[in-house]
Length: 71
Image (cartoon, rainbow, N blue to C red; front, side, top):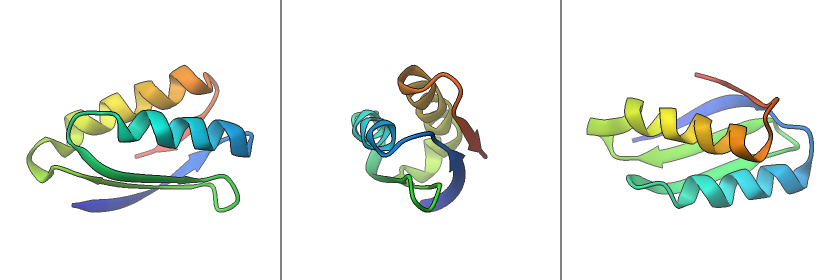
């Protein structure tokens, strides 16, 4: 399943780090974080999507504590 989310990220470097961290999460098949569009696209396992998204938010907060992911 692929879903798009609005995200508030402060810089392109942080967006790249978030994308790299999210791709390492178990169950995520692909991820894209765009600083310019303030958008995140996640492709992940359907059956565990909600729990995967909790890990995605944690990973993003680890890179940039004040970022917001609008689920």
